Length: 216
Ligand code: NI
Image (tube, rainbow, N blue to C red; front, side):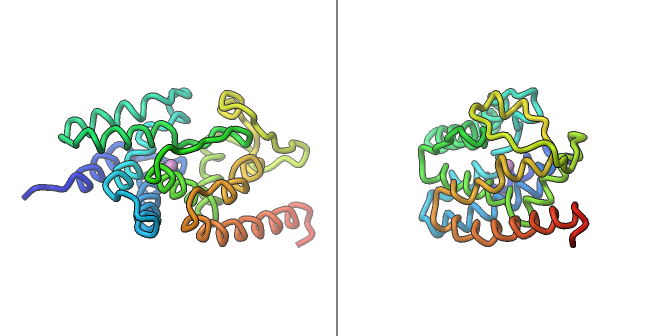
């Protein structure tokens, strides 16, 4: 029996990310993969490129490799070459993985292909809404960050270097990234999904501040 490249990639990624406790675990990949398939169908993007990019996009995130952004693309390329994937697929997949990340409030991150736009949207959808709230606090706990500090306002980072050094509390992350993602969606299919998730986060934050001050 031959195993499909998609199944093989799932196995590879699941093994690599086992024990990940910061919200970038296999189930993040699984959700992004499903969102990406959903959006790709509506946008008529190339499914093989979309699925492989979605599955491999966090294989070695810079956040966990001392800020090294070249590690993920290198590992993904090696895996795809080892599995005889054709170059016309490998090149766009690697290009997507290398450019997908958020780099700060003031830093544009355009994608070169429709497939890249779809996968970036899917990854960003999993960063907002109920899922985004859960992942953001999981990440903050992993980094020993405060949930909130009323005297520390958000910072709108104007460079990736500045954004990478950020050590602020978790609520700031909503203002520095999560609440900005809706307006950065590339595709209309993703924007539709982003709207509900955005409203949910906004309502959550309103309640959070009210409870913080003992008013709710
Ligand atoms: Ni991701």
